[in-house]
Structures are given as C-alpha cells and as structure tokens.
Image (cartoon, rainbow, N blue to C red; front, side, top):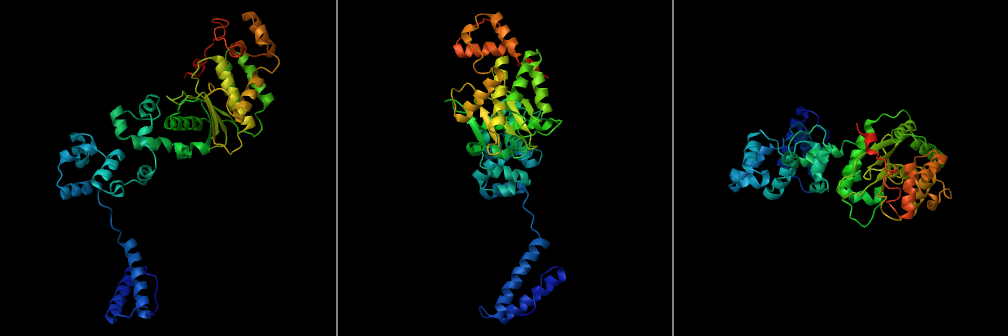
Length: 400
C-alpha cells in the first residue's frame, strides 16, 4: 500500500482522485493491499468533500411546493395543515413563518421530514421532545402574563404555542427536568384524591423559578439557618399589621426567596419549596385561601421542609394542605409548623370563649390573634366561631 495522508487541500483532493482512478484501472483483487488502499482513499475523499462541499438542506417552502407537485396538490389541499386558506397563501409567499404545529401536521400528513422544515436547532429540539404540547393551559397562562411580551390573540398563541412554550420552559435552568414524566422522581407531592393537572403544575413551577431568578437576594443561604428557634422568631412578626411583608423581608435577608404565585386550575396547591439555580431556597405560596392564618401556617410548613427535609435529594416539595394526614414527611412538617406558631400544650381551644380571650392569648405569644383563632376553629372543626372577627385577608399585602 502506498503512502496515504489526510486530505486537507484541493491539491490533496485531486491527487487522491487520480490515485483512485489508477487503482480502479488495476481492478485489484479483494483483500489485496491495493483494494484496501482504494477503500481508505474513498473514505478520506468522502469526508473531505462533506466538509468542503456541504449540501444545503432544501428550503422548507420549496420542499412543500415540491411535495405538492409530486402529489398533485393545490393550495386548498393544504388547509388542514395550515388552518386556513389565507395562512396557506401567507406561508407559501413567505409572509408567515411555519409554526411547529404546522410542521408536525405537514410531517405526519405529507411525509416531509421535520428536519427539512425546521431551520433553528432549538426548534428541532422542541419538536423532538416527548411532550404533549396541547396539554398546557395556555389560555390561563396568557392571562397571567406567563408569555412575556406576547401581544397577539389567543388564536395566534395557539398556532405558535410550541414556540412560546419552549421559550417559557427554557427561560429557567433545567426547566425541562420538571416535565410530568419526571414528576415522581423530582418532587414530593402532597395531594388529595383529586387528579392533579401535571402540565399546569409544570407551568406553575417554571413561573415560580422565573420570579425567583429576578430577585437579587443580599446573601446566600447558609444551611441550617432555618430551625425551630428561627421559625418562632419569624412567627412573632405576625403581630404587626405588616407581618406578611416583614416576613418576606426577613426571609430575603437570610437568603430565602418568597414567591407569591396563584395556583393554576387543577393544581390544588397551597405552597411549595425548592432550591433554585443560585442555590438559594425558594418558598412559593399560592394564597388560594385568602386568610392571614392560612398564610402563616403555609409559610411555616414550607420552611419546616427546609429545616427538616431539603437536602438535595428532592427537587421540590409541593403541598396541598387541605389534604388530610399525609406521609411521615408531611406530618413532620405540620408538627414543626404548628409548634413554631403555638407550642404544644399552650393552647386549650375550649378556653377560647370570646375575642378577648383570643387576643390575650395571642399577646402572650406575640403572634397575630388570627393565628390563634384559626387554630381554634380547626381543632374544634367550627369555622363559624368568633363570627367575622380574626378573618384578615393577606393578598393585599403582595399587590404591586
């Protein structure tokens, strides 16, 4: 076998081609040295030509027109793939971009490879993922401002939903790791018998992380900061009329995000806790029950997860606090939350006869009387007790 070198220039390429022609004239026997040389030169020539003379992918619109010509289709035949006759015209004229929804339909219906129709690498990645894009509650997400900067109609959003959802999910690190198929391994979910909408839950989690990454906290969280004494100190901020705002400031000063984000339909969430990309814990509350005592218990419950359970093996703790009981982890969080607000053995609900007794007891612990009244109502299972007293709202504290 003659001396063979890598093909790096047009001159090398010409010399290799000439040698191939010579070898082919010899018609070498199989497995001979000349045959091996011919195979190797052919391989090197092919690799050089792939890099030196790349073949551009066909233009998506030209590919569609070619398939129309092949199958004898007219514009009217493309309406099922584009949605309307006007969209067919706009796409073929180049005045409207192909949406990923259109591409999915064209690929399935006309057999045109999605790789031919998609130019952007990120779009190819999105359409290849095993995701039911139609399952996201995009109408509700749009009304909540999840798609920042989008000003189009709901029909326009539906047409380009995959693009917008892909942008939304990739707006936070590891946004795709929260998809429903991974939920069992990436979250501890406390729920009742109602079936949770896993795609709505996924969208809510990403939105929480979006809000958290917009906050610049003054310090990094130090592991072990949140404990029973720290939580009791926080609880005493409830005595102030500005307690919820003071609580957020207190958490932020210790490297903990507090995000308020209303729950999406069929998520049944009160709160959640996770670690964001910066390494700081994120406590998220939905405030679906607009009551001050619910705010404080939900907050303490999520903080209890930080104190007791958040060790890096669980990405999220997601809580529906209306769900009775719960596993050992949830029972531990409930117990620490209750202890932080009202120590065990301190409160006898039967002794709380009127509003004055509630106020006196709350004063002795330096906590809001709403917390005391809420605990009494819960333990006596009498939600009418104390009438309209101690039913302060909380959402107004977080309105921008």
